[in-house]
View 1 (cartoon, rainbow, N blue to C red):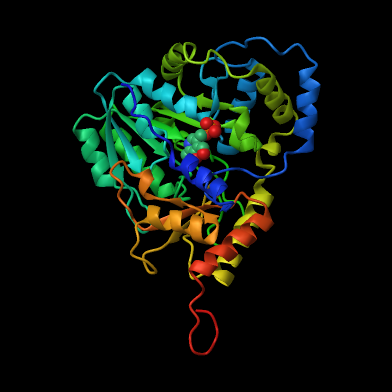
View 2: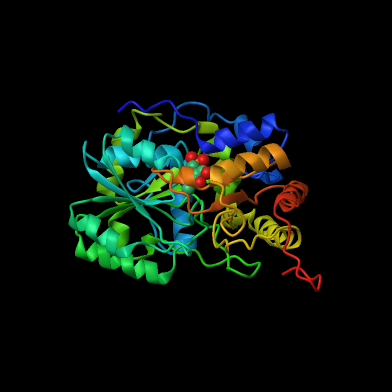
Length: 395
Ligand SMILES: Cc1ncc(COP(=O)(O)O)c(C=O)c1O
């Protein structure tokens, strides 16, 4: 299927932020200082003979590292030879998995609000999108609807944990429910976008949480394709490195398609990522202290300058700001007005729904330098100042 010309909401809001010279809290940019050891490794590798095509499955050393990451953080091994594939970012992995595993017209279930590449990826594969809504205000999963979709014959289900844009992570109860679904529907296969796989936080404490994944259940492991983003893990999203983890038959299908899309990911960057993570696996969480500190700062600034109580961010680096108590404007209209009149850009949630449904939230990215967060939130507060009761103490 040929897609209609379109520009993503991230590109649109970023362009508007530039045009208005506004603070950009919209796009999911990771503005974090790279680990000097990673940059050193990059120049070291650049002098090595690593500049030709790698195997389409990816550099063996990097596949081993990715397998080790899964073993180390989730206790679930994958065979680097037959179950791990390096991709050009999670984005390529998502499209490839869908294209490799679906037939034209196949129903593919996915959950909204949904990351922007899911619907186009399903459409490009000529499959049939079946969007289901997460349930507000906690964005819990619509279990009965999932069950019904599988009962009507859906085979593929595209999931995302930790979830962009809501920051929701997976809980042990969810894992049990997914297991029951898999038992009830033997045809079900889960494609799970875990681009933020290790970025999980304790809700109200400045602490990382224990990551959880469908791969930890043996039945679900056999019926899942896990998708990771080394770009996010290394804080180098422009490097375009990602991967899939899947049992051999699913991996074979993915590799078959992928070799004809990009053939392989950039060899120098694969070699650098492998060498960097090989020596210290805990470098996979290098940015976590900074992200936690910025999450805390964002909460404090929102309470100090604005009327918004943010929803808890349990994963990724986004907060949702509920706007319905303060305005009847559509979220996209408000986001544009805030950018133009107050000089701060955020992302409205309605473009994360295929039908433009507007649940009344703006998304804010906190992977930004402190001074950017401070000025951006101060500007948000000019539009939505804290409610001050007669005794003068902010509510
Ligand atoms: C949920 C989700 N999946 C996938 C991606 C894309 O990851 P990558 O940059 O590795 O292609 C993003 C990027 O923001 C994302 O938020």
